[in-house]
Amino acid sequence: MTYEEFTLEGYGPGGVALLAEISTDNRNRTVSEIRHAFGKNNGNMAEAGAVSWMFHKKGDIVILKSAAKEDDLMTIILDAGGEDLKDDGENWEIITAPSAYETVLEAVKKAGITPTSSSVTMVPQNYIKLEGTQAAQMIRLVEALEDNDDVQNVHANFDIDQKVLEEVLG
Image 1 (cartoon, one colour):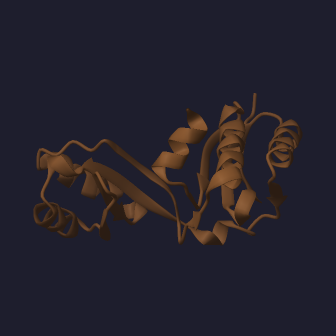
Image 2 (cartoon, helix red, strand yellow; image 1 turned 180 degrees about the horizontal axis):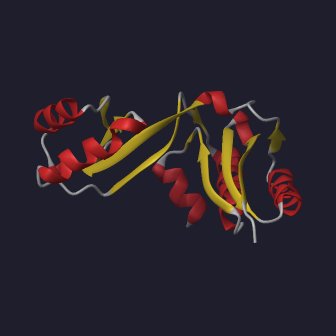
């Protein structure tokens, strides 16, 4: 059986950009299922390239703030070739070029720091804040896409407050 890998792009509620990474043995079936998920959840499929320009491929390493001091962590990641260190509330988020990802991850682990998550992913250039009905619709759309067996990853540029997220999911 031969699998085809491709990306489908679209817009969700509130104009949020979405990228779905697909691996399938039946492109027509999968595209139809994804188009249905978008339509059912107030989204629209887009042409290739319509939203992909809004994302950059980056290494993303997340560390609990309690695991490292900012100055120490900054020194480690800059020496290893990392690009940025962001304060994400309870976590530190390290951003790297894809080519530097493994080197930075290794340097962090060598310093005795265990990441809570790490991957090379598509990072949006900016985020769109969603609340209320649009937040609920977006969560349903992302869940519908992720429930499809052929969808490997879903990337989006929405920002939903943790409280709103818990209300929608709870």
